[in-house]
Amino acid sequence: EVKVSKEIYDKATLEVLLRPKVGLPGVYEKSREQMIKKTCEAVILGNLHPRSSITVVLQVITDAGSLLSSCLNAACVGLMDAGLPMSSLFCGVTCALDADGNILLDPTAKQEKDAPAVLTFAIDSLE
Image (tube, rainbow, N blue to C red; front, side, top):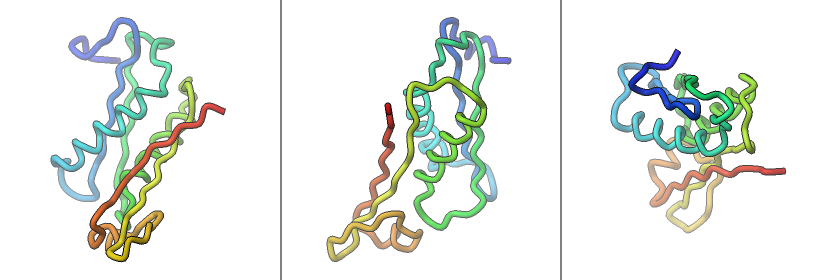
């Protein structure tokens, strides 16, 4: 049941909650929640479920690197498992650029920390 203040009359309301391993969510988790929410909203056919609430809860168990792409992948699999109609599927991929200019796919937490640039992409598939 969606709260009246958050209810959207012509489509479903989406809420994404990213829970850290310990403690309460901070600014980092809130910014990641918004990124994941925008990605999910782009593919969910929410107009098929007006005045409904969809909540995606992501619990961090361990962070060995590439956390945002792992959360994107978990959100997509969760939406598929729930049977929600989606216009396409998506996946997340994290790449890092090391000091030598090499591209690292699925970097570890240490590689992410040492990298001058870390990029996470959300890719959709219409086919």
